[in-house]
Length: 475
Image (cartoon, rainbow, N blue to C red; front, side, top):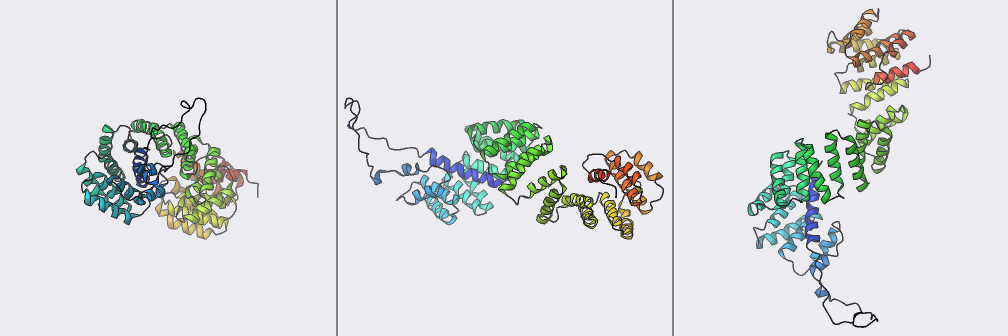
């Protein structure tokens, strides 16, 4: 459910601040009952009262903190605490939490040292020290302090939740579930415990239970976008793709500037609804938010390819290769596009790179050989096929096609072999290579007949090449 531990860490810090800042700072001094003139005592005449000036020294720390409008205003809240003449233990712990959130780690350490000298068994302070050690990248220190906090207070919910998140990060779902369950027994509406428990159930493939927990969490925090993202994942696991899409739409409404929500919804639209137009809208927005998003370019290239907008698709495939030169999946479509454009040297190189990436697919070698022959370099094509033929399992259709390319005499045997092939995908692909061999031999009509037996639309590049061959003007 949660894609990274860092997301949960920020939730933990936010929860601390929300609880302390806004749960306990709503106390404002009531206006003292005076004998001032009121509408009732003045008959029908209302006498305007001068605004009562409260001396600065009478404004409490809680009242000052109550002016902080958002948990995002950490610096404002911290300034209030730093300006106070004295702080209670609880206020010092709050100050340390804010210092951690502001990455003032040295200051937080000093604040907590002061607290723990006075109250060495204060579970809240020890838990906050665990947060500090985590922010410092000291995992051992973090874990040690969480255990220490729980030794003094076994029901300390913040420590149980934080430790549960660490168990989740380590895929220790049994212990994580135990932690969250302990919290939920006494705090059934604890948002973080519900979220963590939902994570556990999702990873255990108990998707219905995960959704039930997420429903409860969403009731508590309906504006938290990632809950909808997580519920979308669960609905997707249950093959309820429409509900998954709806939840991602809600996440986008709540966080319209979060690029990954658009990517998640685009994937669902492509994979399960073939809604390329809707996916394109998502990917275009994603590209606007982050022009360097690699996965956006992958999907945009695929959609353009599917639409037959090959020149535009090639532009995106080249961006993909520039970003990740070893991303082998891009070489196949680049080879196909170059082939259709008559750039056979480029096509050959991309087919060979595609083979380097997927060496179980010997069709790339046949395609590269075609390109070599189209450049009038049959010698190189024969040399490559002879060298690599031993890798092809004997008796397979691919092996027989290699032999036919090396000795293109009578087509009777290879035709019979293709017709008897039970794997329809492989049969379809080999019809393309038969057609290409006919073309290389100057037998265009036979080539067109072979291309016509290739599946019109499949997941293999030979389908697009066969369709292009059938529709290209005679040369």
